[in-house]
Length: 338
Image 1: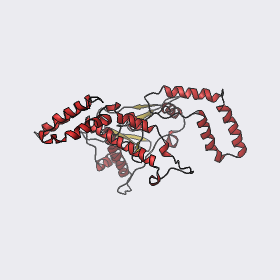
Image 2: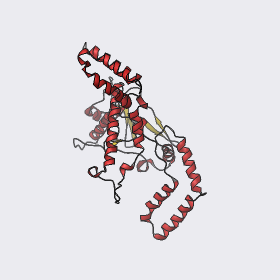
Image 3: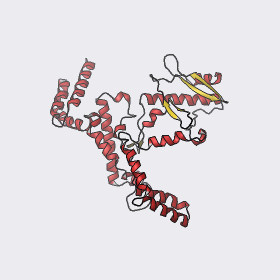
Image 4: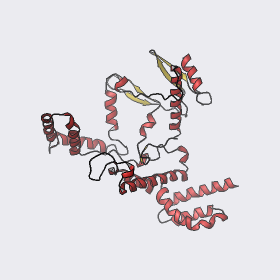
């Protein structure tokens, strides 16, 4: 009976949030009121106040005020720099100015509001890994003059005075009105304008440059990872098994979105788009340019892994028939017998 009441309350709450509008918050309060048992109707005043707040912060789905407000706040990046008139790096949290504290506190409140939105709308089961992707602003495109100034500032410590003056003249000519820099900047702006809906306008160009390189991949391009040994061992097979087991657990966390997005100071979210390609992605060789191909499985399990040893490649299953991952001991045996 309690379960039926809870299900009825949840259904009416979702219906109330989907119908809520700035001018109809009383209707939302009515839905929530009718869903409560008689013993709980003493909260009419609380409900009449909570209903409009629920709309403004968690009632509108992707278009809710919480998400729009977070997106607007994330355009501001002044919190990363010192503004006390002194030169130096980023201030510690204990010395941050009041406006920075208010900025970070506002983001934290909005983050909790988005968490509540996912819970109310039934999406909390999927986790929060990509919960704020649609609130992240697009990568900003710097002005030509700013780019030139930063370029010169980065080379000033490593160039002699005459070399720096020669370079400064070339950069000034590039950035002058009617110079080639304006045409290049206009091309970049057109490229960024065509990437509406994407967080990074430079991602495609970066991948094109990376995949077109003909250098040997080891060291020059490929990523690598180091294993973490909870139990020290001199067995290479054991180390490989521990590394595979940890990778499988991490892949499962990504698949069910158990992870939370990375956040600077536990507040400012970062883009998590690349996590979608952390597993099941291969670089396919080409004559002039390689390509990336992602083939995510239909389920949440990893059928096999490939191990390279002494110029040979071996593949073996890492899951039981029921989809459960092999234990570390089982993985070690597979590595030894492959």
